[in-house]
Every structure is written in structure tokens, then in C-alpha cells.
Image (cartoon, rainbow, N blue to C red):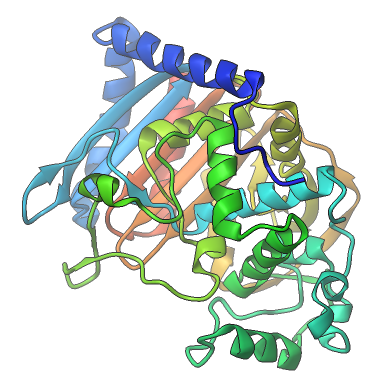
Length: 388
């Protein structure tokens, strides 16, 4: 059954809790804790902004369910528009966490199993290498070596199917981690197919069930004024272009308010419908180890506290194929971990991280792509100091 399109009592309660959480933070402005958080965030972010010439940055921090928002710079250089907590940024690959959640939701509804081979749900791919690839492999980047992006000559559905039929893995499924948009993109296609709705429709319903009021696959005309311009390496304003599998892999736009809410419900703070909470938690299961990294369903996690070098090394692996070892049995979700995800498009750079046991999390949304290691280092500095 597709996600509910009407507000359930539990969703109404979630939205009320969301509103009250925002109000409590607003009324707490000027408190000692707000001042401390501001100083901690300034210390970590200002050097990064200066070093990489970031036009605008929105940061949100949650500490035990209390939210703090700090904004820097401009959402647009011309005309000059300041960043606010409501500014919409492109999430890049953080979008994949929503795709994984749709897949685990579909599994909870009995529409699919992550252990199903891809071709079970895509008959047109029977007889291809995808007979031996599980949906789980798509969700953990262990399908066998997809490239980071679809080839430029794949422009329509017919060409997409032909590409998947002709694809030849470099590795046996489940033996190497190779970060890839065609992998998670195909998972999103299958999740939508099994729930008998378009991916875009299901994503919008999921956002609603999560209590995310201003998160979009397609930004409505009325919200375009809040949509930041991204800036590429040449300083030119850019936004993500439409392409096959973009929505499933890197196409979500959101703001600091919604994304800190998303981290909170991943930590069990706030209320969401039971089936959605179950789907979120399932994405935290550890399926593979690759170096120090534990690969969940899109999320990447490490025991906390974690050494900076280890988590930086894990994030740098996103551009490399690395050996992976299955965790057998899979590692159940644990509270004493840090879960994190980076995301980039040509003009945006985002990072989110949270520690369930400590009930702390951070969202960093920038309108310029900059090195992952700089994002990770700044975020860890903030999280470690917030619990001093």
C-alpha cells in the first residue's frame, strides 16, 4: 500500500510536536545554551567559509531535541539575498537516504524484500547480470561496480534499460563497495514500481509523513524565491539539471529546519507514523565493512567517538572501489554510533551527521561544493564540543 496521502492522527501529532519544537527553540533565543552553540559553530564554520569562498551556509544543530540555527552569507549574489533557516538548498546524495527509506517502507509493507534479485521486479532485465544482484546490493553500493554517473548517452527509458541489460560488473556482487548513482537510482525505480506510484509522488508523501513541510523533489513555483543559487568552481550561478535517476539519487531540495527534523526522527526524537519509524530504523542496519566504514542502507556509520582520520578516510572512499566484507548476521541499529552522509551537486555541498546515544546532530547546507574532509572536520568539532 502506498504511503498515506492524508494526515493520520500520528502524523498530526508529529506536526504539532514539530511546531512546538520550533517554538521552543525560538523562545530560547538569547539563552546561555544558544550563545554557547553559536560560538562553537562560529569557531568551526567561519574558517571553512573563508578558506573555500562559500557564498552561503545554513547550519542547524540539535542537542537533546532543542534546535539551534546559525546562518552565514548569501543565498544569491545577484540579487543579494541572505541565507535564512528557510533557504532551500540542493541536498545532492543525501537524497539517497530518502530513497533507502522508501525501499525499507516498501519492504515493511510486503511489496519487496531487500534480498530479492533486481530482475524479479524488472522482468525486462532477466538474463542480464542483474539476475545476481540483490536490492540490498543496490542500497549498499555493492552491486559490482557501477560508475558514479550514468553515461551521457543514456537519455530515455529505453536507453536506460539497454544500459542495465548490457552492464558488466567488475566485481562479484557483495565483494566491493563502489559508490554509484545508477545503483541507488535503480533501487528507487523498483521501490516506486512495487508501490504502484511514481517516485516523485511517493517521495512527497514520505516528506509529509516525516513532518517535513518544505522539502521537495520539484520545487513549487511559489517556493522558487527561497531556492538558493548554487555557485560552481567558476563562481557562476547553477542549479541541478533534470536527468534520468536524478530524483532518486541526488535531486531533493530542503532547508535547515526540515533537515534537522529529519535527523531528530532518525534518532527517535519526535513522533512519526509507526511504519515510517520502522523504515527509518531499518536504514541504520549495518551490512558491510569497508575499511573502518560500516555501510548501512546509504547511511555510513562508525563507533562513536570516532577519530577524524577514520571518518575522513571513509568519506574519501566514495570515489573509489574498495573491498567490502559482509557483516553476518547484519549489525542491528546501535545507539553508540555516528551516522553521516555527504551530498554534492555542481553548485552545492551538504553534510549531515548524528549520534543517537548522545541525541546530537548537525546539518550543514552550503551553496558551493567544497571538500568532504572539511565538512567532516567542522561537524565533528561542533559535535564533540556540544557534549563537553
